[in-house]
Amino acid sequence: MTIRPGQKSDVPEILKLIHELAHFEKEPEAVKTTEEDLLRDGFSSTPFFHTLILEEEGEVQGMALYFFNWSTWEGRPSLYLEDLYVKDSARGKGFGRSLLIKLAQIAVEKNCARFEWEVLDWNQKARDFYHQLGAEYMEGWLPYRVEGEKLIALSERS
Image (tube, rainbow, N blue to C red; front, side, top):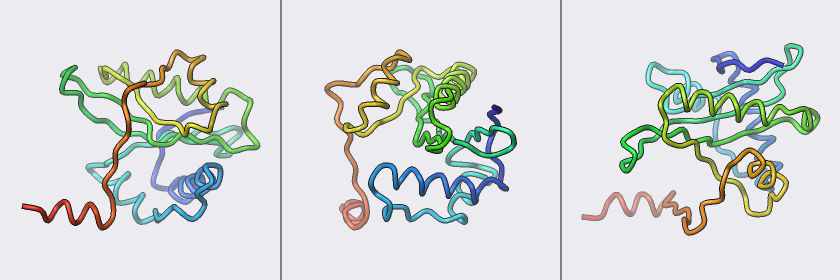
C-alpha cells in the first residue's frame, strides 16, 4: 500500500471515487463535479483543495480530498477533510486508517491547530471508527449552509 499526492492524471479516478462515495451516501445523483472542475480547482497554481491517493499493487483503492482553513481563535491553520473514501472491495485492510494518519501527519507538519471533518449521522460504523482514533463529536455545533439561488440572493442584498 502506498499513499501519494494526487496528480492531474488521477482526475478520472478521483471523479469515479467521488461518484462511488455519493452512491454510498445515498445521493448518487447529487454529484455535479466534472473532470474540468477537479483540474481547475485542484491542480492549478493556486489549488483550492489537495488529494491523497491510496494504491495497492498499482491500483487506486481510495482517496482523501482536503483543504486548509484558518482558525481565528487559534491563530493557525486547520486541515479540513472534505471526503475520505475507500473502495468497498478494499475495506477492512486499514486503508482508511492509513489515510487519516497521513492527513494527521500533514496537519502536524503544517502547524495546524485542528484536523476536522463531518460524517453522516446514520454512518455509525464510521463514527465508531473515528472515536477509536481519538476524534470527538462536536456537540453543540450545527453545520449551516447557503447554496444555489439562496446564495445568489444573499450576495445581492445590500
